[in-house]
Image (cartoon, rainbow, N blue to C red; front, side, top):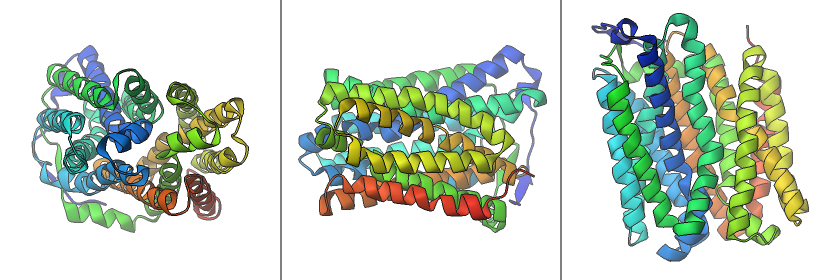
Length: 398
């Protein structure tokens, strides 16, 4: 269990109205949507970014790798360093960093400036996501905490499945730089909403970094993190490069790419809520289904995805399966460490984003070294590997 130092907690949210509490929950959910959308925006814009900055698609994929690595490191560090500060102030400050990062990406005249901007996005994202998990318990009555937590994390799932196609559409209509400006505008609006809707949230407990790291000793949590690492690495090894794959395998143009990603997104929203309900009953069975369908879909796309109709069907199945990953694994992590929610969530964010970075990195190396469709074989293989800890080691809810 993480070591914590108790500090004053006046629980201002408990004293406020129910409407204010739920308004705050919605603001935080929009915040998680915004930070994860900002992180993954390059996925749907990879080809034009590479062309504009004069780098290969594999190198352009590092815009995702860098952000994920920074978020992976910053999540546990920021949870510890900022542990004594009012959470409303911290969230607004981190969202402001996100605004600057997205504007920097939109302006970037070369790849070096883009890298610096994406570092800022990673800092903002890692901190917001890690802190969000521990806030809902202070905004709503105890009986509503589960619903509020699901709403906050639905922002992450929705960003994974809707933010990317939205960015691709904006990029196709007005250019990739406009997509980053739009993300900055959304982040700014979210900052204002958080400042207006969240009550004062003095730190309830200061989590020490050493205590967070000791949570790795929790076997159930550790196994859950292994599953996260395999599924997310496999997904992003393939999905970071889905645009050039669809262009090569299916002959899809820029407008059709946006449509295919939208199909993926809609299916992902359905998958998020189906998996959320299933994970409460049986995380093991839910993750078995997710891993199996994800692996099969990714492996089939380069083999049979020559038809746009078949590619669309496979993208729908991909979205349906991956849409449930974040909510299912987050449910498992919080069940494994119910008394250290913020510390466990910071580790979840760290592993999740480290896996995003690793997936984008090894996918890029495969794309540049072997060929673009190789990323699908790599991603499918890692998703298959996730079946081992899920089936043989991960126990059901006890």
